[in-house]
Picture 1 (cartoon, rainbow, N blue to C red):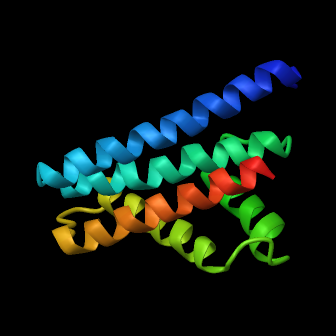
Picture 2: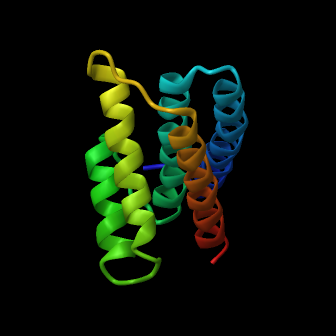
Picture 3: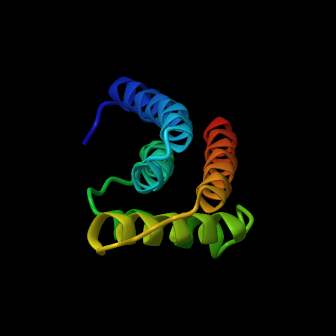
Length: 131
């Protein structure tokens, strides 16, 4: 169990990680490192989602459990637009393909779209953290 002041510090740390990852993903996209950018796009969302989970005292190291928690607590009961569940699921699937499958290619246009969705997702998480 994390102490409350430690929890607040960790939430802030995870959110800052997410924001830093936006900048890193932009750099990777501009450098034509598209598969790595897709990885960072997912991880930016993951860091933000980890901050939200910490705020609600949910802790896990499993990506699937974290995504399931978000779907149960925020998507299913309509606390957030279902598009955010789709954005997260697609980012996770794309990251998994890029990390584990062979010969995966993403176009710059696809990655730009993913990056836009990432920023939108993180903005929504920031909004939820302020509630």
